[in-house]
Length: 358
Image (cartoon, rainbow, N blue to C red; front, side, top):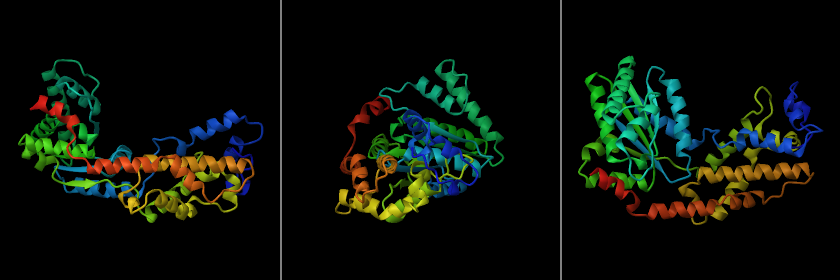
């Protein structure tokens, strides 16, 4: 990256300057850039949709709801949102056992494999034995955890819920009933992909399992994408506020464009150009449906890499950079796929699993 780090912004800490200082090879610079949190996909920023998810999850736990579901199209950041929510719930409800379970999307799920997978979820390393042994071990572990909770409460966060089979729902009902006998309440939160999760609920209806729907899937909420100028502005402001490397005062944009940062460049001031580029790409109110978080961050990374290269070359930042970045990120393609998903009827791809269960 650029050699000049503007020492006045760095205080007495010269770590960022050393990273981009003279004598470093281009390979070293690229390695440093690749290690930056903005380029690491599992670094989660608390966007407006994620904050809304956290509010709803806190409410569900406080009210001890048996079940609630959040759904969104692929790429909207469901898994990252649920991962951040897990940490937040653990911080808020320290005496409550909370487990985040990733449903396996396999064509012919094995009951034995299901119990082994759930044992791993709760931290049990002993996954040997026949199916009845595994089920008993899993049930006993969960009952012990429930008994140990002074609040008599347990929370399951189920990710990829569109992959759930009938046996998954039956197990959740059984363990919930077992816990209730001990006075422990089970809160089940599901995060699923649409339209597949709606198809799962439809299949429950076809199987006459209204008991499972009313218990786990009656309350359904949308995990929305970023869609308003306020959403995008808050995200860009968050990027301006993040610090890297740790222990310095170097912000994320400053790491890549120290000269521009010293001259007053801020990502939050780019919101009008970003929104304008998105509205051009998604006409006729397409932005109201939300933007794929996955593709949006591709656009942001592309923009950052571009301005870093321009600064290194001593060139000004052109006004149309966001147009290039959002086109590169295939945001329009992702929006068209999401629109097709919203128009879909039943997804016949899941039918085989359920026919085996029924």
